[in-house]
Image (spheres, helix red, strand yellow):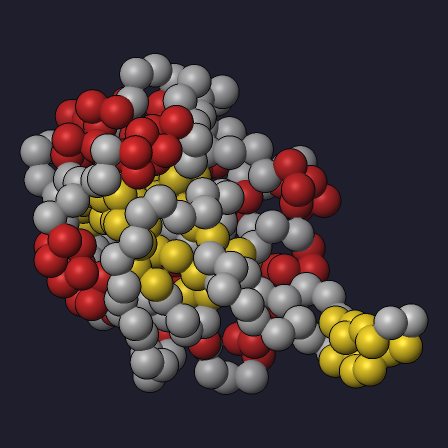
Length: 272
C-alpha cells in the first residue's frame, strides 16, 4: 500500500527555519521530521512512499537521492568512483519524489499523483506531525466502515496554562489545559482511489471542500486516536519534539496506549 507524504508547503509559521530549508527537512533531534514520520509507517511494514514536494523541490530530490549514502556506510574507490554500500539500516524503503508544483494546494498535489497512486487503497499524511498511530487498527477501522475516506482525529496538545474561575476568584491554576471533547484533523488518512474524483484542480485544499463533500455524502469517517500526537508548526514545537527524543524514548514509536477507533462524520478539519 502506497503512502503519500504531503511535503510541498512553504512552512510560513516556521519561517525561522524554512527560509532556506523546506519544512519536512527541518531537523528534530538531528534528523529531518519527514524521516520521523516515515519511521512510523515503516514500523508497521509500510515502506512504499510518494513524497509530494513543491517548495524547494530540488532540495528534497537531492536529499532522497543522497539518503542511501547518508543512512548507510559505504566503501568508495577513489580511482573510478565505484561505491559499494554496506547497509547499516534494516529498512528498505521505496521512495518516489514528485514535484507537484510550487503553488499547488494539498488536494491538488494528490490529484497530480493519480497515476502514481494507481487504483488501490492508499494512505496520506503530512510531513510535519508525528503520533504513535496503530496503523493496523487504523486500516482495520477503515475497511470496517465501507466509506471512501478515514481521517485520524486527535485531541490538540495543550499549549497554555489553565485558569478555573469562580467569579473573579481563581479557584484553580493548572499548568496544562484539561482535555475536552475537541477533535481535530491529525492527518494519517486512508483513502480509496475514488477520493481523487472529489479533486478538480491545483487550487483544491484537501482540508476544505473535498473533505467537506465527503462528509456530506457520508463517506468520511473518523478514527479517534487517544495516544501521542504532536505537530511541528513552530520552533517551540521543534524544540519540544527534540527534547522528547533526548530522553531516549521516542513517544511516536511507543505503541502501548489504548486506542479507541470510533466512526463519526464529519469531524473538525483544521490542518494538523
